[in-house]
Image (tube, rainbow, N blue to C red; front, side, top):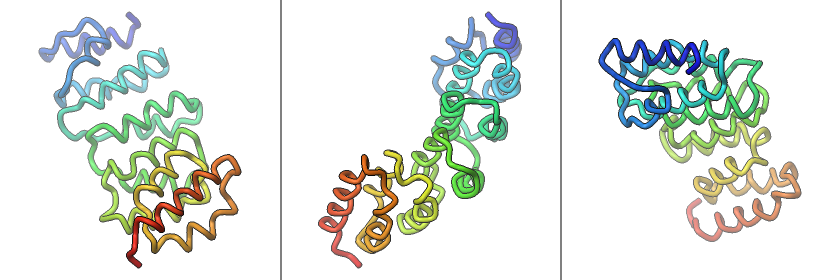
Length: 200
């Protein structure tokens, strides 16, 4: 057991939660807020010590019983020295876990920072985090990040799910930026939107 993992297990034990290691923590559903706070306390140090164990501890947070402040995760996601794989684990945890409202952070990451494969997790999670008031608001935001993320499967799936006939002029006008490898799928999405939705 690495040093920081041992610290986490020891602190959890002191407050009445006995685990052998982080693998044992990962099997528990509905982590109490005190457990979550200890994981967050040591998470940055754990990433500096062992990426594998840090990723495991991060994924544990998806099982948090109550909403928590994910500031530690947000800062880790923004680190320049982490690769796509490491950041993706953090990103999907940010989206899947019960957190306080971080809608402005998510929108800022997608609107005002450069494209990154790890940010596809944030795109995927836009509906899940319930950031927008409704379908129209979500689609408006997707048009704002269209040029940056249109050639990712996750983004196209959102277009497929939420675009309506009113969005067709925009989507048709944007066909020129679609990757040739995606154009067949993109055209199919446009045709399906037109055929399923008669509203204007």
